Amino acid sequence: MKALIGLFCLFIIFGCAQKKDDTKELVSNVVIEESDISEEKSPIPSFNYNELEEAYLLAKNDTTYVLNFWATWCKPCIKELPAFESLNENYRNEKLKVVLVSLDFPENVATHVVPFMEKRGLKSEVVLLDDSDANTWIPKVSEEWSGAIPATVMIKNGRKEFYERSFTYNELETEVKTIL
Image 1 (cartoon, rainbow, N blue to C red):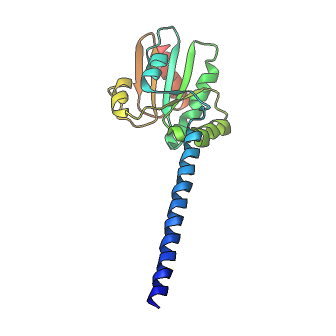
Image 2: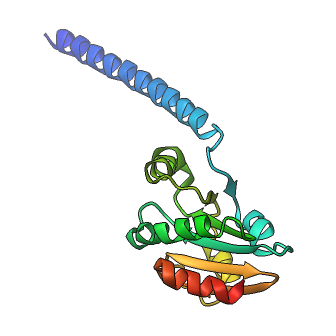
Image 3: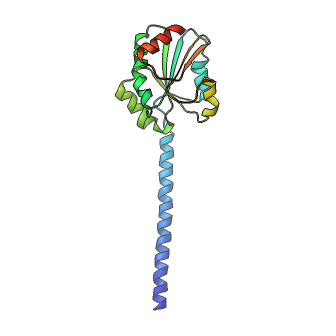
């Protein structure tokens, strides 16, 4: 009887050990599939801070840049987006460029940011700021910035105005006219 119980215990232990190995193999396959997905090209341009700074914040031309830092999970950001879209449309014949800088997580671009852009029909340029060292780049954008969003920077010919607040269209246009 003791031998039978011992043999039964061995079967259970062996069966559990086999299941554990199968689980490791399954987990390994999932990790490989996730890494394949993360290597896909993003549907919107992605910048680290230095690239964003070079492309827009330090641009040496006569274009006025209006950079709005926002995220799909930020209600005040979403509420003010129509003002930036209207500004982009109304000043399309001027040397003014509206850039919506998404602070969403890079892994959410395809599942959150792109569907959000499509649903709302965003026409302004949208880029992703993929730089986790916010403690370094936030004060480079502005010493005044606490890191809260929405936040907006307006730049022209080295002049920079920073706003850590939401805008209506009229408020936004009034500020843009001071820097044009």
